[in-house]
Image: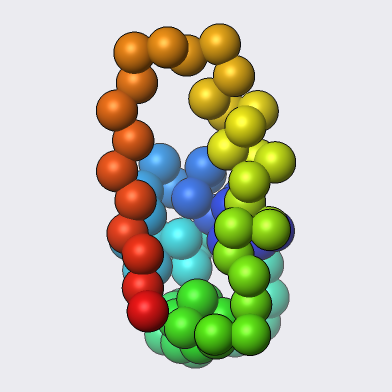
Length: 72
């Protein structure tokens, strides 16, 4: 969830920007590493996490082009 909050707060998908909006005492570099490890974890079904959020964000939008970065 904090990654989603970071994306919204930073208005960016850059990990370094997202990391600045994630709470904690760890340095920004460590938070970037944490985010990267979570995103690269093949046991995490990211679609299950983000589908409901995307449905709400895109609700009522008919002419929107969405680009995603899929890391596998």
